[in-house]
Length: 347
Image (cartoon, rainbow, N blue to C red; front, side, top):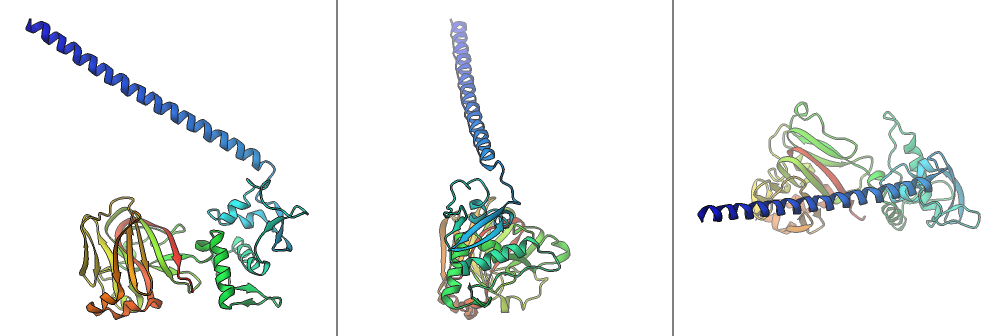
């Protein structure tokens, strides 16, 4: 009798295992079919794009109508900065749908005097060399005498147009500059896509390249990062410390930062201003740092985690942090991270 019950239980167990295996196989088969369908759809889209691109090359010379003024430009020039909306617009994929005038010229609905300086900048960048770098264009509008008007309204309109076309990171670039640490031990301080792979613990400042525009927000994504910190530094006092110092942003006077990995907090001059026990900076964490005239703000993975009023820092003898003109982004850590986006002060 006992033997029969054991055999029955064994058969039931085997049946359950077999059922689970079959369910697992069904799930995997369904996932495989979904992947095959996704691949098929992707291939169809690729074939359609190739069809749309037939006969269209980067060397094409395009006839343009810029706000009523006719001119010509090479497709390669307009597509120089691939991530931009301008490059997408003139990539060739959408030539049949892009707005054209009665003569068939591609129509750009922008004032010629604003767009022309941007177009000339792209032309210069296309033939740029290491020994002859191209500075950002003068912000403003082109005057009939060839000079650029830099009145406040023209500057804002130009910046708005550059932002509209997704060209801001290209026209007004940033770079990482080693601020603390030993250069020999930290050879990779900067590359084209604004990423860091620091073999030793170090601190970096984000610096404008060829222009004086200031950032009011930046976002970094962590990878294999240790003792990570991101925030802001008042560069006049921050630079006065020895560059071989092991202190980073949030440790030194006139700098404030979100610091830590497992347990985090907002630090100024090694003082914990606000504890953030619920925050953990792991791989692929997205950290956004913002500042304006009155406050500093941090977001982690899109969620606000801290706001520090600048007036509060006066209690810690940090009056310099009130002067926004000299405040720059600062990042501390060992390992890998990259800058994913940034925005400029509207001035």
